[in-house]
Image (tube, rainbow, N blue to C red; front, side, top):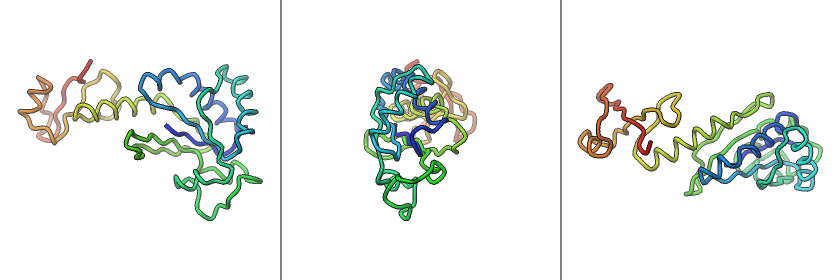
Length: 187
């Protein structure tokens, strides 16, 4: 999971990086690596890490990439090509679109991208929920309904016939011909 920040020493991002440091074990349980990125240089990140620890009580031990030439921000379409080639002199407002989360799969493809406004802290519990869903659905040919959380019923994908669904999952409920639910596998 790559999550980006428009500038070091910004208030909302300070709380986010600290919260993520506190959740690192949850990502490890899911075999998911955490990588932060800010448009400022790495030496600035090292100074910022002390503020993050002071504010949140958590030490940032995961990688925090410096992107002072804005290359990664442009590569991931967080900034337009015409944004220049340096973070020098740019304000957080200049980089407001560099507030994204990317979940990248083992196949190196972006599986999820979310962009948050500057004034709204990210919900990392939701991001963990999405990772849980993506890992479950990749393994079992199921989908997860709205508001799903671990342990809730899942949807059997249309690619699975009724006969195959019975063999794989046992009992299932046919809500509509195209919507079949069953207990979450592996629970």
